[in-house]
Image (cartoon, rainbow, N blue to C red):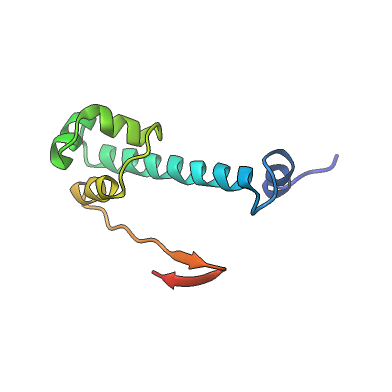
Length: 102
């Protein structure tokens, strides 16, 4: 029985890296992981969505949408959420496979 790597399956069913469909898939995956990280951090702090929303200045529904990746939240809102959770955020920016910001 032949086994396939996740990369091979993704290439076949989603598309190769650099294609529009693959880029969209990977972007949605990153947003989903971000929402999951926010939910996990909120629960670790024993906060409800409503309590976190109050700390950030948004409604409970907005926190729910962010956690479930059902909205394109503003970057400033995401940063406020992590700040309210006391989380340190870091990210990398790459251009043509060269890091330009850390």
